[in-house]
Length: 345
Ligand SMILES: [Zn+2]
Picture: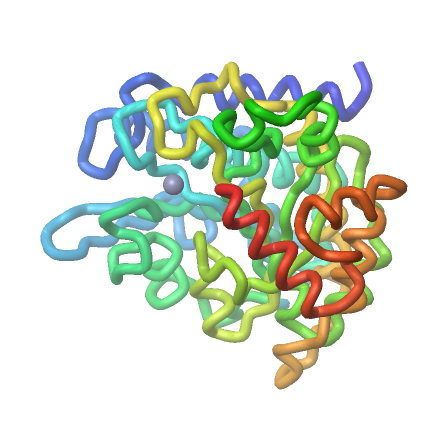
């Protein structure tokens, strides 16, 4: 079996195990089942606990109990600030919530496993599985990634954060929008592998570094500014604290926060491609210095390149669909992203 197929297979096993019909809502029994599963998998992929003897990092807010999890794939110099890859494991409703966010949990574990098999990075890699990202905890003091950053990280701090959410699905458009368009599937097909990235602007060294990485077969990366979409997930607390980061998402789809967000609807090959990309990101950022005080860079040239590479010959016609002549300036990328967001992404 090819490495990518092997990754895809394990991703599917992990999503199906984690994403049970009972869901993983805070305080529910399904959440406890998920806690045990996360702990078991961190150990299996070769992590050691990030803090003391346990992967679990409990905290309490307003008499509600929560649990983050963090394991470490040990690096060559353990005194350096670690790279973190993370995703939330709680669910918004009592349902599988596979794309949101079982997919990213599985990807984070797969990246950890691959890095372990390669003998680790220059520095530690933290695999962080956060609690309480979903409403009513989203952006509150109970949000897992916020409690992790403010109370649970050690004195080394965080070198770089790699976060993802909603990365298990093909980009598609709501059927009420495409119903009346002849051959709509031909027009929308080039959008399916799209994967959106924000954070290239989070350090001035980052656009050049990311530009060196190739985007694996199966995804088409589109970089844009976090400002357009806001802090949609767990990367927000890192951004606010000037930690360089990348955030990947395939946006919302018709099964977003629905009982129909089930493991059978995910694209495990696309997820395997994202896993490969993240492995490269982790290696590259681990080796980079990221001097302090350069925490915002101009990423427009890099962004333009990603739109160009993603769409190839289809670029101009697709630009037209999104209401611009080309993806060749900050203003046009602004308008194209606004159009994509208005289409429900
Ligand atoms: Zn969600």
